[in-house]
Length: 253
Image (tube, rainbow, N blue to C red):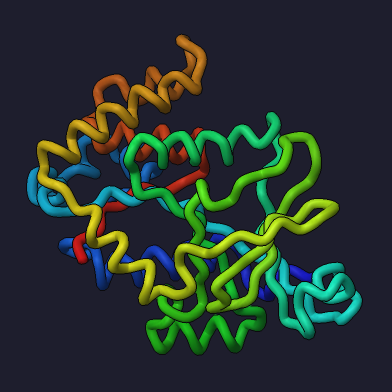
């Protein structure tokens, strides 16, 4: 079962760069490592009020999908698909899917939260998408955590899908079909745009988000000490990075 021929870091960098160039005001919002390493310097690249007003805070967990290219894959053998290629997005099992449940909780608060995973295979496909500026629109699939309902939290689960299908499968021993909210980038982007809020509303949501994420750490956790003097949006970005392996950005569509 092969990984695609590019790293998760490479895919994530290309996705975020393209997304920010096109859909983030000024083309930049600092990443959690920037806030950590640069401190106050990281806040000089953006105006927080302008960033918060009329934007959608978006939490993204970036992943690579396995690429199934053989006809003996379970999804094909069991008749779910007639032929390769089929993609598998693995879910982290640690702590009875603690991370997935936390992403669902973050979404339930009212946040825009998405898994973003690759739906290409070869270095040429990646290079072509990067050169054409279609990493976001063609090379990526988006899933909301709450559309991925796990039948239990003890067995191994993954999501199986094909690009642009209206459905996917939560897969363990038996597949559970679900309707995909986003068949393509064209259906995902307007949804993000409709969730834009005022600066005041975004600040209120970020406050709830920070409190929610703080409860996932022990009281004396070093991460909580790290964020103590950081602005609100930096606190949210750092907590999401360490707890959810997710990136926070602010989109204006």
